Amino acid sequence: MSLHSALRAQTADCHAAVDTLFGRFNLSRIQDYQAFLRAHARVVPSVEHALEEAGIARLLPDWPERRRVHRLAADIRELGDRLPAPLPQPALRCEAAVWGAAYVLEGSKLGGALLAKTVPDHLPSSYLSPQGPKSAMRLFMDRLDASKMDDPGVAVAAARDVFDLFLKAGHLTLEAVP
Image (cartoon, rainbow, N blue to C red; front, side, top):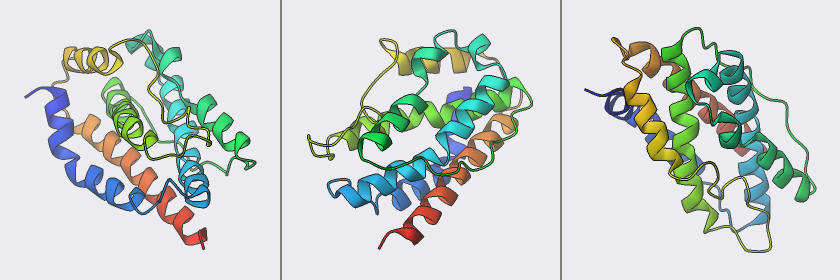
């Protein structure tokens, strides 16, 4: 089984939980959209920073083009909001953990492209808009599967940890939305 297949199968429950939770945000309403972006801003900077400290650029040379924290921050500022305190970054102690965490962030771009269509045109949506190198997801999956992990368990655990960060951020943010 490829690493991609293992990650997809063994994190499907987490992915569904995150989709359900974040589906509660109505992105056509500015207040919900701001909250949605704040929730992401609790996670994305921490995970991107952890990936960089763990050497993601060695595994994905096009990493700088894949980063989204600057787009997220710009959208939040354009909406007149400020970045919330980030959640603690995940511990990524090996290559397998880096791949697992990156899998979640890269996969979120696919969902973001779909969600961008629900954001009114007058609101900033560069964070959700497709970006990165051409065929970025295919390139990512090719590199992921070429990584030759003997035991995908560490990658799966790291992916589940990142999904859990998104769940925690979503719950924290929804508690504050009237």
